[in-house]
Image (cartoon, rainbow, N blue to C red):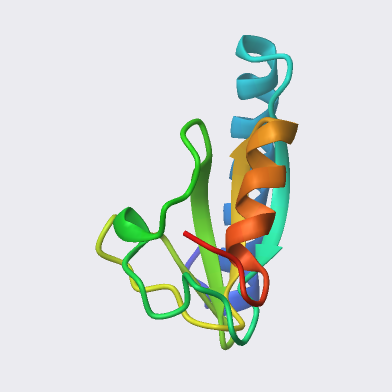
Length: 107
């Protein structure tokens, strides 16, 4: 059967796969969790490439939601204020990423 896929269908499928990957990850790394981080307007990482943003080791950005689009990031993806990052990592990593993603944070 041939049909039409909407963006919401694709995002839903991607999120389902992310949940499945998360389940596999928690089996391997008991302290890991999934988080969402929003890049604040005056964050020090806004305008920087992901690889140069100074994110802590052990934190994996799995996707970026930007203006209704879902981006699968690479190290060359530029972070913008308002970006919603889906992140996998430890609680300690999330505390550190919160410091660099918030307004006035340092990288």
